Length: 111
Ligand SMILES: [Zn+2]
Image 1 (cartoon, rainbow, N blue to C red):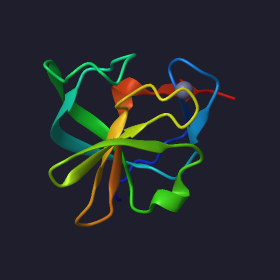
Image 2 (image 1 turned 45 degrees about the vertical axis):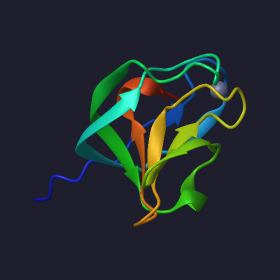
Image 3 (image 1 turned 180 degrees about the vertical axis):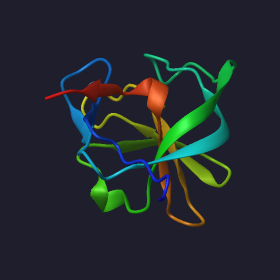
């Protein structure tokens, strides 16, 4: 009995109809990542952050349906919706090429 949980629903952008991840692609993991709050404008600096504790791990960027990069901070690139550029919705680790989507920053699209 393993406890690996994959995303059952499609994961989509909170603000536009874009699909970010298809079902079964992400693996639920516990994280402790301090991610800046979502800003409409990329000109805002990330003065406010929150801890992301539940994330979907995606080992390969090609497994995304729609995602874009915003800024690079240290060893990480922030991920944004490729269509409306809202974000960050997750982060990408440059060292091991693994990406994480914050569960609280995407919509579970049933059906
Ligand atoms: Zn979007």
